[in-house]
Length: 368
Image (cartoon, rainbow, N blue to C red; front, side, top):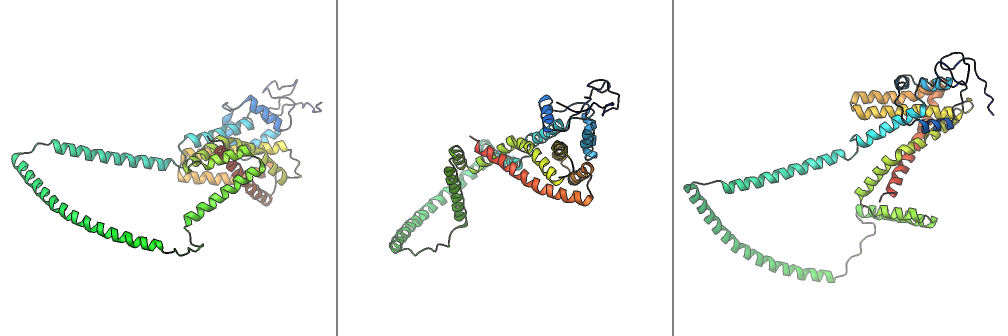
C-alpha cells in the first residue's frame, strides 16, 4: 500500500491540485520515484519520440548538461520527452545512419575496384572497335600495293625466324635432357637436415592460428557445448571475406541491443562511484539514458556533417559534456568529478568493447 502524500500544488506547473491529476497540465498528482519499472512502461507505451516537446528537450539535452535529469527528478516531466523514448530515438537514428548511410569500411575499396574494372573494360572495347574500323577502312591502289609488299617481306622474315626457332628448340631439348640427368643424380643423394628454427613467417603464423583454433574446438568439446562447437567449426570453414561479412552483420544486428543492455551497467558504475550520495538506482539509470542519448545524437551529427572543424568541435563537446553533467546532477567538487569521470570512462570503455565484441561474435556464429 502506497504511503505517498498528495501535494497541494502540481510539481510541474504549480497549479493547486484537486484530484489525482493536475487540471492544468494533466500530470499525475503523486509522482513515483525514478525506477526501472517506470522506464519499461514507457518503452512499451511509446517507442519513438516525435512530439512537439522534442525540441525543448533537444535544446536542454545539447546545451544544458544534466538539466533534463534534474528537471525529471524535480517532477517536471510532462513538458519534456521521456528519457527512454529519447534514448531509443537517437540510438536508432545512429545505427540506421551507420548501416544505410554508406559509412562502411569497405565502401571505398569496392568503389575503387568497380571504377578500375569499368576503365579496363572500356579500354578493351575501344581497342576492339579500333581494330574493326581499321579492317573496314577502304584503301587506294598504291597503299594496297605497299601493304602487299610489306606483308610479303614479313612472311619471309617469319620463315627465316621459324628455321632459327627450330634450331634453338633442338638445342634447348638437348640441354634439358642433360639437366634432367644431373637432377636425377642430385636427387639420389641424401638431403641435408633442415634446421627446425628456419621456417617461413607465413607458415609459422598459419600453424599458430590453426593450433589456437584446435584448442578452442577442444575446449568447447570438453565443456559439452556441441551446438556452439558446430557453429565454431562452420565459422572456421568460411573464407576471410565471409568471416568479415558475418562479423559486420552481427555488429549491425546485435550492437544496438548490446549497448542498451549496458545502461544498467553504466548506472551500476555510477552507484558505486557515488556511494553514500543518497541517489536511487533508478536515478542513475535516468542519468545514463540522458547522457547516452546525447552521445548517440553527437555521433549521428558526425556521420551526417563530415566536416573536419565541426567534427573536432563535436568531439570536444562530447568529451566535456559528461563531467559537466555529473557535476550538475551529483553536486561534487571539480577534482572529485574528474576522478570519477576517469574511472567511469575506463571501466565503461572496457564494457562497451566486450559488448561489441560479443555482438560481432554472436553474429558470426549465427551466420549461415
